[in-house]
Amino acid sequence: MKSLIKLIVFIVLCSLFLHSICGERTIAEMSITYKLTGEITNTNPYSIFVAVPSNITFEEKTLPKPEDFLDVSTSVTQTSGIVFYKTIFNGKEGFWIPPYTTVKINIYHYTPITYDIKIDESQENYDVVGPAVVNKVNVIDLNKLFPDAKYEGIKIGKFKLYVSGYIVKGNDTESLSIIVPAPLVIDNYDEFHKFGDDNVDIWISSYNEWYKNQMERENIHIDNNDPLIPKMDNDVLGDDTHFKFKIFDVPAMAFTTSSNQPIRFYYIIYYKYNN
Image (tube, rainbow, N blue to C red; front, side):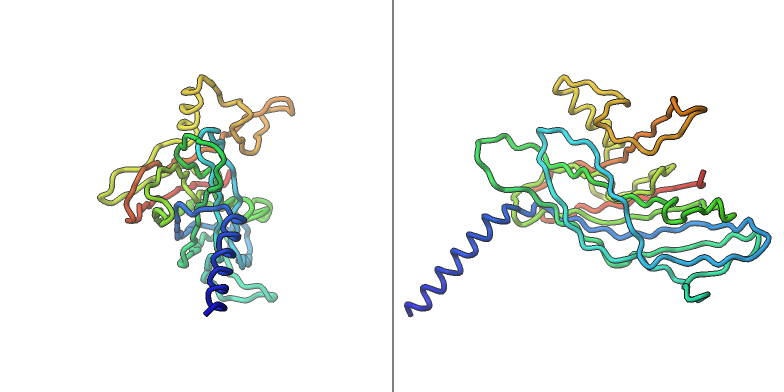
C-alpha cells in the first residue's frame, strides 16, 4: 500500500514538473486540406518531360503583430501533396508534354494538415490579456515549384488553390478570441474568393489594414515603407537605385467563441500567369 502511495505521489510530482517545463497551453486547433490545379504549356517545337516533386514544400512568411496581442506558437504535422503521374523517364516520375501543347496538372492533399495553436501559459504579473494572433502564413511559390520554367520554354498559369478547413477551440480554454491570416496562399496571387456556410462571416479583407488600425489605436502611424511590414521581392524599375515594393498581405479570420463547435472556412485563390 505504501509503495502504491509513493508511486502515485511520484507520478503527480512528475506531471507537475513536466507541466512547468513545457509551460504551453493549447488554445485552438486548426486543420486544412488543399488542392492545387494549373496549366503548363510547352512552347518548344519538341516534346519535353516534366518530373514531378516528391514533396510540395511551403515557404513560411511572418506578418507584423501588435505587441499588446497574445503571442502564439504553431506546431504542424505535414505530409506531401499527391501528384497523379506515373510515367517514368530516365528514372524520374512525371509526364510528357507534346510541342505547343497545354496540359492540366492536379496536386491533392487529402490528409489534413493540423496545427496546434499554443500560448506560453507561465504568468508572473496581473496582465490584461488581448486576443491571440497567428502571424505565420504558408506560401506556395510557383517560381520555386517550377524553377527556370521560362528558360526551358515552359509557361505556367491559370492556377487555382482550393483551401478548406476549420478552427476549433481547445479544451484548455473556456473562450477563444483570435486573429488568423489565411493559412495557405500562392505567392503573388491575383484574386482571393472566400466562401462560407450559415456561420457569421469571420473574414476581414486585409491583415495589414487590421494591423495598421491597431497601431493607430496606439497613436503609431505607419505607411507602406515602414520596415515593420514585410516586403516581397523587389522589382527593378529601370536602374539599380529605384525599386517597386510589393507588400505581402492576405485576408484574415477574426472571431471570438466559447463554443466547442468548429469554425469552418473555405476559399479559392487564383493565380493567372507567371510573369
